[in-house]
Length: 75
Ligand SMILES: [Zn+2]
Image (cartoon, rainbow, N blue to C red; front, top):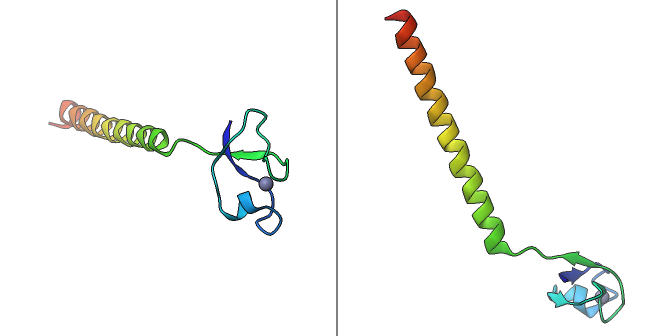
């Protein structure tokens, strides 16, 4: 697993340097504490972008539908 050391920066050099560790047992090799999972930033960005695009499309669709309903009933 890929992650950062979850120990205090005062107690472990890996926590101090925020080094990304790749450990099979998901424990810090220095102090043997569990790692905080590090997410792939590019993947996270892509997911955020997709979510934003989807919400914009949804808002535009709702606007169009409300304009359509408005014209249907009041014009
Ligand atoms: Zn550590």
